[in-house]
Length: 287
Image: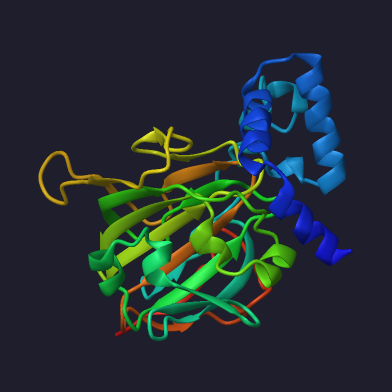
């Protein structure tokens, strides 16, 4: 059955299906939208008591429900300055060192950091011998993405690609999954060096948003696009630790890259398949 599921993903017109679902998710359809939200809450056992607006009727569109805000203080930030924090609610897929420019995906599968970053050689060089972490967001999770550490935006790259599912089954069976799916790469300058936040698209992910550019995907065409940003002066964009930096409209994956010697060790309990909650300690900074 698993082989059938993977084969169907290769055969399915993933972009067409995803864009159609995206239009429906953005539409205001009154009672139809509310019914869909109620079904989704029940199907995925979503704890709406954490939401700033717990009532399904409060959301005019499915996208607004999916990217819902949480109640203030529901995700307190780790205040220890020696630690960076989890950027999202989700589960760790994999984490560890970037070895010979390769990132571990699953048993028998890895991919290059160069490919992940849209074949931007100068960017990939900055993360040689560094560390990575891949976090999967399930449909039930909170889908806003936050800063693990204070950082100033220096570059954004949009990389077109496939729209395979990014669930654990697909990660175990589709080679180079995160470096072949559509994605947005945001690079920040931080006190511990460069940090890449790679927001990976997936099947029926309608779009990816950032707080500085709005909706980044899907543009038309198959070209890689890059934007450079000033890191000093009045136009520099600096986001504090814990600040929102983006959103997924329908679930996906975040891949974080850090430079060599930026991280000392991951926090206790942070390992593959461990649950993450935005704001909790993620990794200790190198002294």
